[in-house]
Structure formats: C-alpha cells, structure tokens
Length: 284
Image 1: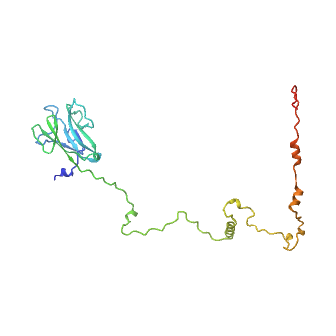
Image 2 (image 1 turned 120 degrees about the vertical axis):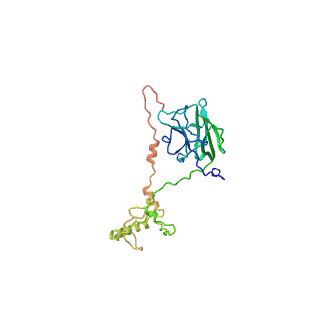
Image 3 (image 1 turned 90 degrees about the vertical axis):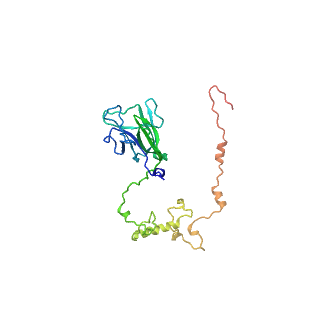
C-alpha cells in the first residue's frame, strides 16, 4: 500500500504564479522543470527572457486545502466556488489571460480527499499514471493527483507552569484537608462583669419569651417580680376591712351604673320644625 493510499501525505493548500525563485513565497515550491525534462517557464511570446512559473504550497496554517484545479479561457465565466490563483510577479510582469488557472479551496475539516501533487509536462503526448489531466496552457499540460491526506494534529498551546504545580506528584498525594465552615463562630472574649451580666439578662429574656416566639408578647414588666406592699399584705383568714375596698354584687353595680338612654331616645323622637319659605305653603 502506497503512502497516498494510506493518506500519510500533506495536501496542497494554495497555487500561485511567480516570476522566479526570488518572488516565490518561502512556503511555496516552484515547478521549474516539467516531467519530461523541459523548462517550465511560461512565456508570453517566443524569445522573451522573462516569464513566470507555477508554484504550490502545502502549508496548513491557513486551515484550507485545494480540492480541484481547472483551466478556463478568457471567454468562460469563473465556476461557482472557484477562484483565480494568486500572482507573485516582478514589477511590470504580467500573466497571459487567454487561459487562466482557477482552484477550489475549502476548509480542511470539510473534506477527506484533496489535491496532493501538481506536475507539468510538455506537449509530447506523455501520460502520467495516477494523475488527472487538467488541460493544456501556453504550451504545457497540467496534471494533479488527488487522494486521502493526513490531517494536521492539533497542538496544545504551551502554558506557563508555576513552581508549586511542578512540585506536585501523582504518586504521593497529600491527605484531604478537613472541611471548614464558611462562617465560623467569633472568637471567645475573656469574661468580665459586664459580659456576665449581659449573659444573665439574655438567658432570662429567653425564658420570659412567649411560646410562639413573637415580639408582641414582650412588655416592659417582663421579668419584674410581683409582690404587694407590706401595708396591704393580709393573712388568708383576715378580712379586707383594712383595705377599705367595698365589695359590690352584680346587682349593686347594675343599680349604680344603670343608664337607660331615655334622654337620647326622646331627643331622637322629636319632630323637626319645618322652615317656611316665601311664596311656598308649608306641607304641614
């Protein structure tokens, strides 16, 4: 199995014209000779010393590959998806436009086959095996070979590694640290009289709070002990005559504070006097 059948070759990524090796870009390969040993210098007319050469590149930095090459005349329109090849020429040098070379360039990840090699032959009826005939242009015949190619493997970008990370070892891992609360309790302060008193009051307030925990059940008298003045203290078997508090029954209270609202009732029953207006007889 050949290398191209295994796909272990780089594809062609660009094709261009160049006046000589000086104008040819550094990433391009100049085709200076044909396969039958003739010079591959394209000249416009016989006897001209200056001309131009066909060159190609396999630099994969752009992420594009050439999948097809065509030769069209100046009267043909450019096929869809194709573009004319670039020109790297000396000043005042031109390329003949009677026949032009155009290529189809696509992203490298969208295809599995691409153009792998380009060759030229003179018009000597020479055939190249495993190559595709493109056409004749200015006295030469253009061929290309197409097949599977090896896609460039992505390279990881170098990153700076700190000294602490370099010292880490996968064989000897440190034990995990214990979990710590995100909001630790505040440090304890040395006890003092004021803090002890506040602690006592807070404990007492907690005991005096209502069961439902609402703030409405707390008053200013909470925590104050209730006791009678010694002047009013009496034994259980003694009478309450010293207190001078009259004891009244329910009937006594109703008789003393009974109010029938009869005055208000009579006032409500009064008839309002009518107002006599000039020229209008009264209805009463």
